Length: 206
Image 1 (cartoon, rainbow, N blue to C red):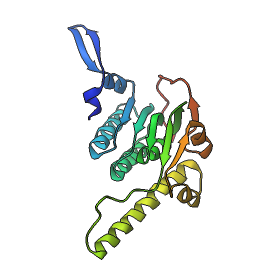
Image 2: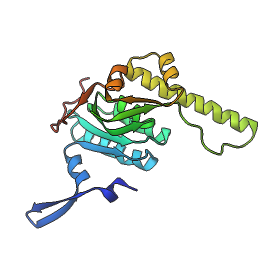
Image 3: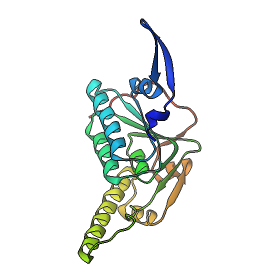
Image 4: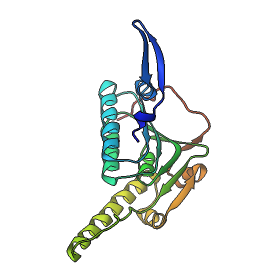
């Protein structure tokens, strides 16, 4: 289900009477983006368009991305990652609940990474597609692509955690869960928070 379909609405008084506005729209005005649910091409299009608009509007101001996601399509997630690092704005990521798989990779890539007290992260190797079939050469090509994807994702995690690629390979061989404190210790997060700032962040310094 699309987040907008379940997003609460707020009644606002205007000069022309009352107006009903999605809470997500009000957050967007504060330069805050929700990344919730499975990461898909549609999700990536929505997040990327918001990032690009906010960067064009005020490149010197920060953006907050709240994440509560089980992960999803790697290609879609990598497009969000690329846009996050292609714009001049400082990106603050906040884990609200769970950031798993591709969502954990995106969370770890923030300039400031905050975890709420009872949130958690999951990292693991990319999963094979169910029902993989075809000729031996087809399967070999799919395997090669999967290994390239593994190298890309583990490289990103190594970059943002300060761990070696070998260490990341070892940890992601199986599902590895981190609570908030463990995520900070491992380098996946910067700080555990009990309250959230609402003021805008400063822009990334270049």
